[in-house]
Image (tube, rainbow, N blue to C red; front, side):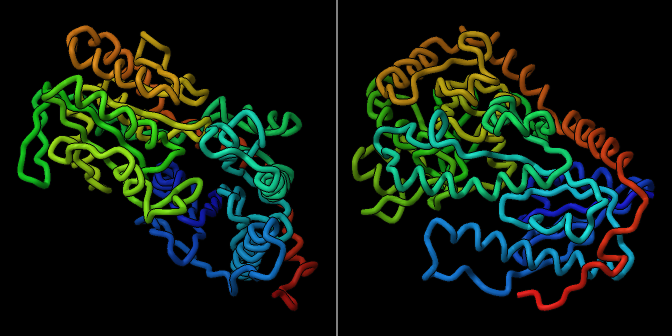
Length: 422
């Protein structure tokens, strides 16, 4: 039996499906470590940690993230030492290292194979930073990114293998480390996502919408510039004028996942509604939704708008494609990896709001002309299924476990001890 340890601050995170699969196999003993706020996963024992303090506020601002990572790494390594003392020696550790949890994992278990989820490396040019002229990158901002990458460089050096979801994310990592990183998308639940010509959605105001009506949808975890919320909102007046019957469904929260909050408002929704007043009888802010309601939003959609900076590709784009949506997406690198203009969707310049509006209106006025693109979108999304993701993850884990030596870790041999560990 192989021992597999998953480490993720928000476990299960991206590891949900592969952790479930391995936990159900008699060939693996699966254990997980997550922060005290992690939701956990039924069937997988979860050990929770809490950093013993926060980063000091009087330290250098460039170093606060790194100090926070060290504190996370220390908290996790205390748990690793306890596991070692209890006789649990992982053959493979699969981890998201972005918060620093695995900084010292190899010091406790040097013989365990460490697989890192290499989600993003932050270049100062050519990706999200400085992409939007409305939010220019300062020298201070570029310097912060360079300092932030110190953690990611250590993570790349420490791991034996890496996983990243897309070719574009792979290309951002330093060339010296790309050979150890495999491109594996964790997958979306294509089994639950499909087109439904009879789908209906009842709005909070009591109105019921039906598939086939002129409905524009937009989805983001949170409504913010990184996901093009400002571009979408600025295009809405043209869309609303151009089609008097259109209804617009906007899904997403008012927090910030990436970037920062507006300086003069509580949320980007509030700020953009102040800048671009729209008819709230036709534009519906639905907030964050239960998954089944979210699926219905996609199923009633006539055209789905997905905009993003050159950044991590959202699951929601693939979920919309799997649901048979006609997608109008931003012509940015991560989107071009899955959408070819005119074949399985339409692409527009991220900043060209009139072009976005006219493209959306064109699809609404001729809804029957895009059935081939909808079918091609579903076929593309099928390549990103959970089943394919689990198979690829499992293959890499089995490859890593075959490389694991049977020698004891330095910690077990008494070379390491907890000692005075702040």
